[in-house]
Image 1 (cartoon, rainbow, N blue to C red):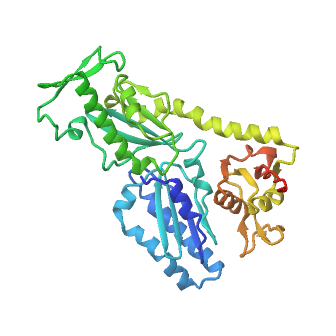
Image 2 (image 1 turned 90 degrees about the vertical axis):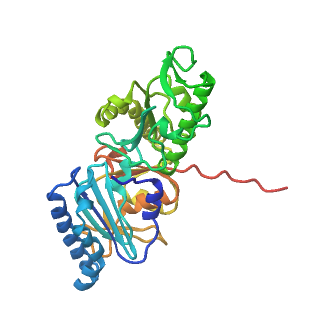
Length: 390
């Protein structure tokens, strides 16, 4: 499984000169003979669309040759997740094996298509579970329907490893004690000169090392983090934690006894309100502002507003398409059905421009976009007028 963060999204949103191929497909955990066959067929579709967009057939084959090389990498196909996303542009190739079921789609435009990946970053998107004890540390990445373990590097795998070089050079053994002040029961290590305060310091150092090791994974993102641990360890980890999106509620109990699926089942009810609250608050804001001049819906209203940087919150149908051309100088929209070779997917254009202007995008199932439109948005508040200086 590969991580997909907001930094990855920013890279994909960069302007590029030349064709950009975006390929999405479902995949099977652990691999399946179907996956490379489906991938090969989608590569053929991408080459056909490249020739339609103006490349000669040999040029299209050469352009996609680095992606075809993936067909000869057995480990790549053995280590698949629930969905595969691939992006090929001029001097650019990225593939992501993701915990998100993706439908088949091939897009060839002047920019990469990112809409299918937005659920990883918002609403029913990604969250993490940190399951830890004195014997082990696991980080799980989940979505509403999936969970997978994240490969941890730079994170101690146990308390013994974290304290391998102990300043007292004494073996430590563990038992619980009710008087440590960390919950119903606390942790005590036996060893000459080792008391309650020493034990708390050792645990705190252990958790601080875990926290530092997780920075490379968690800090580029804003996904919620759920702790899974016995109750007396929870407060100490929270003391060591520096990640700002740690949820207040955690999963109590020994996580060593729980599978990834069981941890996911216990974590989802904790993170679901977090995801739903932000989306419902945005939809409620749209309904409250409807009719005040602060909302827009439909392609002809929203696309020019997005281009002008006027959209604060965008709602867009996840699977819909709308092909046409925007004249950036006038804001005039032409919609074509069927699409012409030079057309853009205007919905994808709206997503890209909203994100570039630091707006928020909610990719929703068909029928959940406000006013029954394919795209709708909340406009930014106008800047206050400054009075003249005396």
